[in-house]
Every structure is written in C-alpha cells, then in structure tokens.
Image (cartoon, rainbow, N blue to C red):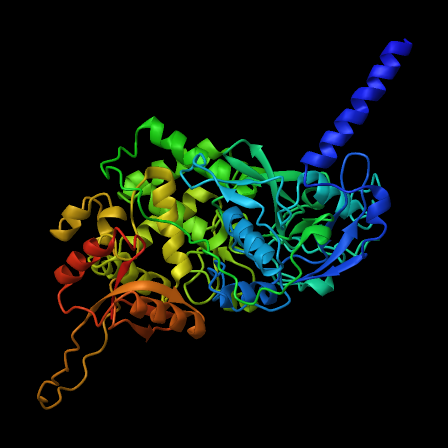
Length: 591
C-alpha cells in the first residue's frame, strides 16, 4: 500500500510538471499573485487564477466588439459578414459573422501587435469541408480562443456549481436571447451592447446570451468546433447555461456567433514590450475558389440528400426546426429537412441548393430572425417595417401584412412559385451579381458569398458573383435551357393586371431616344469598406507593375481594379485567366 501511495504521488508530481512545461508555459500560483489583475493591451482583460487543472490566464472582459474589430480591418483585415448591416455594425456590440478561422487570424494579428508569438499555425490537412486547417501551437505565448474548460471557469467565477454566471436563478433581464419568439418586445433588438450585460463576480460580461463564442476545442475532430454561451437567437434559457455546448463547422459564420480571446498569464513575462507599430501580417481571406468539380450532379440521388443533410447538421445544429415544433411544422432532423427541400424544389425544377442558400443567407437556416417563427426562414416577401401593422397572417396580401405559413413545405412551395417569374428569368441570363441586384434589391457582398459557400461546400460547384459570367440561371433552375428557349418545363400562371378604362387617345409624340451607356468589365483585386485600405491595396498593385490600377466606388464598397477595364466580356475573361495563378481571388465586375 505504501508503494502504491509513493508511486502515485511521484506520478502526480511528474504529470503536473509536464502540464506546466508543455501546456502554454504555465506559472506557479505564487508567481501569478504578482501579476496584475487587469491587463490592458489591445483590449482589457481580467486575470483568472490558476487551479489544480488549469494554469492562470487572462480573458477579455467583453467579447470582441465592432469597435475592436475595426482596428483589425483598418490594418488590412477582412471585414465581418454583416459589416454593412446597420443593426449589427454598432461600436459597442459584439462583432458577429466571423468563422473560426477568421477569429483565429484576429488572435494572431493581436499577438503580433503586442510582441507575442502567434498561437495558430497552418497545417497541411484541410478540415472535413475542404478548408485549409489551422492548429494551436501550445508553446506559443500569443492570444488564442478559450478552451471549453477556460470558458466555464471564467463564466462561473467563484460559483463552482452555478448554472449561469450570476447564479442559478434565471431572469431575461440578465441575458439577451430570443424570448420574443417572433414578437418585438423586451430589452434588445438582435444584439445587445456589451456594457448592458451584467458582469459576474470576476468582472467578465456576456458569457450567457447575446453571442455564441467560438472555442478552441474540436467537438468532432477536424469537422466541428465547439460553441459556448448561447446567442440572441437561442430559444430557451437552457441553451444559455454554462455547461451547455453546441458546435458548428469552423468555416461557418452566423448572425449570433462571435468570440473573445484568452492569453496565458505567463505571456506577460515573455512578451516583447517594444511597441510594434507596423505589424507585417498576411490576413485571412474567405475562400470560394478552387473547388471546381463536375456540375453534372444528380440532385435526386440519395447520396446528395445525405451530403446536404450533413451540411445542415454540421453548420446549423441550432436551427429552430431541429429543436422544436413551429405551428404545424413538426420538429425535424437534418435528413428530413434535406428530403423536404429536394422534394418541393423538384416539382418546380428549382435547384435545391439555391433554396438552401437563401435560407442560410436570410436566417442562418432558421437559427436567428423573426420570420423563422412563422415558418418563413427565406424571409420571402418579408418586411420588418410591416410588423407595426400586426403579426403575420396566413395568405397575407403583399405590402399589407407579412405572411406566415403552416409548415415549411407550404413556404417552400410559395418561394419556388415566386422565383419562377419572368423578372427573375431575365435577370438570370446575366451573372449572379446582376441577378442579386434584382432579387435582393441592393448590393450585398455577404449575400453573394453565402450563396457561393453553400454551392461549394455541399456540391463543389463554383457559383460566384461572376462565375459563370453569364447564365447564372443554370445553377438556379434545373430546366434553364428550356427557359432560355421560352419552353420552361414548369409553367407558373401569373396574375394578369386588371383591365383599365381606355383613356382618350393623345396626339402621337416622337419617340424618346435613350442614351446607351456602354458597360465595362473590370478585374477586381479587392473590395473594401475602408477607403484607406482600398488605397493601400491600389498602391501595392501599382508597385507590382499594374500602373493603371484604380479605385472605383460602388454603393457600399471601394473596389480596387487591375486596370481601366474592358469593353468586351470575352477580353475580361482572357485577362482573368492570365491572372488566376498569381491572383486566385480576382473576379469580374460589370459597371
């Protein structure tokens, strides 16, 4: 017995030594007592003291906000997905629309800003959805995303068994979640400002509700990353409890997913304290290129349904329709939703990927938003400004009230009928960019990228703003060739306008001659919200030999071009192919 005790004690000491020397360079409890309780670098952090199974670390008091993220963007970083949305991009709200890789890149940039070694390094193995992989270097002293254990410890503070950061009793005044369930009420509309949420005993705010936090841990190795905390789209306080965890593919971003950073306490002893004003950093870019597979896909093969279901389940486990019944729509599994999408779109010869992509772009597949409570995750013919007229009703008259549906099948039918209109057929003869101007009604890079991501991730199809350069309809309608010939397989009877009383004939007037504006096709090297960043990119291109590089302004973007553009579409395509090797993300914009 004495031998067992002595050897157990010996193994414990050895294990603890290995933990301290190999896991983030931990420091002793006596040393951490000399560390400041608050550390102010790029962002204010609070010290979380060490315990037997966790070295001391610092954690952001608040999630990374839009104000914080603007410094990263001004330095050249990629904007968040909902950057142009006025209700999201508010300085003191947490930044959302960030995938795991984007959050990790912010951590690396922040580390360099403060003289620390970046914690994330690229790997040679892509994740299960085909994106370049990154991993944590445990020897690095830089910023990283919290582990699940670190998140739980920081959220609970000194309350070891607490359900929520403030204790066991829940109150909707303490956390931002979707208790409205389709009715606008309560303290917050979508995101809450970080200072509006109550701090726990250690001064950490926003650990339950408002946003889901990306964690460093894999839930399914190389497939899904862990999310903690619950978001403004969460439908029950149960999802806000400290122990609850969910997940998403690391390449996913959503309306209520954000992040905060942690830092090993030992980093303060090893950082380079010389301020680095000109940080050299290769910023993360969202990818949609280099996934060119055969576009001849059998959408009615069971293998496609399984692939679509895997996407729905991995990316959006918090979809309302996977969690509970809505009106007459029973709770679904991902495969049931996939099969429903395929069945309805088949009847209208609409690509099931297009319907899926619309749901993802409008409501995160029903994981956020008001319309999801009315079985309208596509937000089809939905206007928030109509809500003061009253709650949605069945068969609502357009422009009078928003419409609700009994179930998803009914909503899918309405959408598929609506998308088969001559208005959209004409728009689909051009590229996706031109189509989206008609469908969305304004310029939205996020909408374009989201559509592209769904097609790429599920089927390996490259369907982007300018790819294909014409006939976007071949990826929206499965009978596109017949539509082009004026012989669609599915005919939707469109309502004819009421006959008007004939007015008295007027004297004939000479026809007005419209001035024809010739389009030009520009090769775009980058699209930015910041004019400063756009000018920096333009200058870099000019130094690389593109003397005619210029900056063009669209509705919401400063676009940097390689030159003065081309009159012929074909000429732009040839030039684009020539640049693809050195500049894989170049795309064509018609202006």
